[in-house]
Image 1 (cartoon, rainbow, N blue to C red):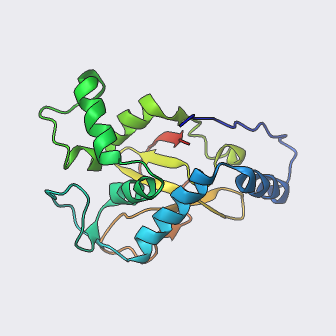
Image 2 (image 1 turned 90 degrees about the vertical axis):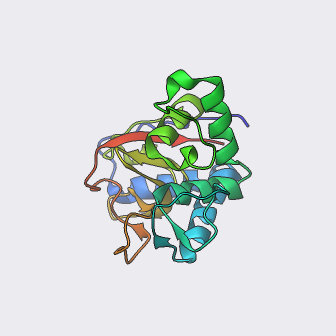
Image 3 (image 1 turned 135 degrees about the vertical axis):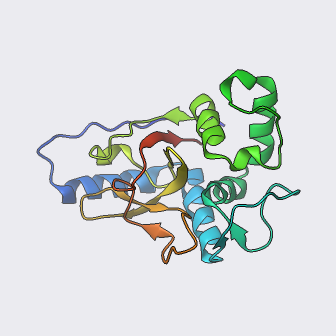
Length: 193
């Protein structure tokens, strides 16, 4: 489908309450796939998957385990995008975009650097400045140097979305107020429709 970026400039004098209100209003007006991304990510984390990085001959985990990339894979799959197929086809068509020695459809779409390269080529790239809260929308894909998640429509007191993600076996909550404080470098912020 068409990809559209909705960059919103904001007045530096706006209050956090006004920013949250404006963001909420825009999110309600956004394309239904953003909603689907969020809800599919939530449906996946509602299963409380145990954290384990493993190879699956079927590509998508089917045993109650998973990693951060599986949140994004489940979110997009539920919105009609088969990330496994899309990424594999792009790796074969454009190997120069990826640092993949031997393409393997069953695992490549579950690697953060591969997904970052894919989204950089196929989605709208947005700011990684977390102080620009108006630029962040629920359903956006958030990529760190070795982690990935989905922005929530729930926002913190400053107006920044929470992050829907899967980071470790010790994780208690899968939707957390860490988008701007996660301890890895924020390297990508993407929107698809």
